[in-house]
Image (cartoon, rainbow, N blue to C red; front, side):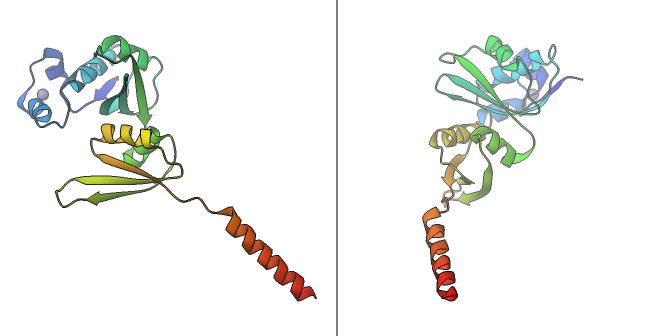
Length: 181
Ligand SMILES: [Zn+2]
């Protein structure tokens, strides 16, 4: 069976009459009002295309609409979404597929392995996700912030300095040479 699990009821987005639960999510900005169109399009597409996905969130960065979905990649879904979701300034749709959990979602967004995730709370109650990766990528950090609806900072772990290791090795060699003498 084809299905999309999304935070807004199918009947609500299809009729345009949101129940109090759906309306609350939009009024409190848990879901942006423009995301209704994306969720509606996914429900529509699921009638023709086999989907078994959970909708995570969407973000608009530049002229691209990014949609994060938990589930396996689906051919033609980006094209179907682009055909149905018409938003001013949006020229293309990219679907970010991932399987399970925050770490996998971040890896799919950042396009690299996540080494550690820490959540840091500020005194005003807001929080920042500090994500440790191998390569710095400020652009991807911004996209992650938009999709996760929370501040995300991406920090690169300092690469090992080969020079130090080389120096150690040489020292070691010299010691060995001295021992031989
Ligand atoms: Zn509803």
